[in-house]
Length: 321
Image (cartoon, rainbow, N blue to C red; front, side, top):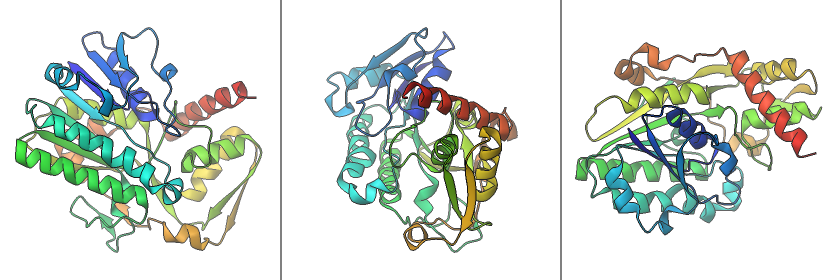
């Protein structure tokens, strides 16, 4: 299979690239502009794999049409995931989470043979009033990134409906695993906990009962692999729930593994409350029915997945000392 991974040097993208490239039957191509603050690094792709890498913004690819003609599957993992920083840099978030995708979408109109998988976000739903979030739940994001993810997904839906292209959007939450960012002010919930606790710092958790759905990158890739073998028509949106866990239990689990730092409870701050996504359960029944239960399994336990991620952080942080 010929696979094009956009943003393939970033955290999730590089893990997808390494998974598909380890099978020599696949021909994997990467496009990544290595934009500032995205965490992309050409060293994320395993050197022994035969991967063609273009270090260019997709807007600057002169042969994109010819490349798309050769592909069977396009995985769009372009993006910027700094939720808080997007409030102060909304135009940069717009550039990475909307504009680059629109350039791709314009080119895809000519290539109806392709399957396209877009990596959406749980943040697209915001903080709904429903007790359970399904794909039919109204999307009302509470942050800049969520707004832009909804916009791009909507453009993909129109592309699929008007040009008969198979597009699937996977909406998922906090993801963790090797190759994720370890530096910067906004490296995600799990990354921030790991880095601070490794450094012996105190992690503040706002409320004992607040929970999140977390997804190991391996579980996400398992879903993408199964989805790549399926047939569907036009646009489909799928939730991926992963594991639901209270933020407090998550922080304590990380603390026990790293054996340093401290976890304390406190009242939620107004700044955090404004972008909080609530306590609604996240249903992935549609995806389970489409792919089957085996595709939804995480082949590692949560503890093992966290340990692997922590070991990655420890290695990277020690190297930066």
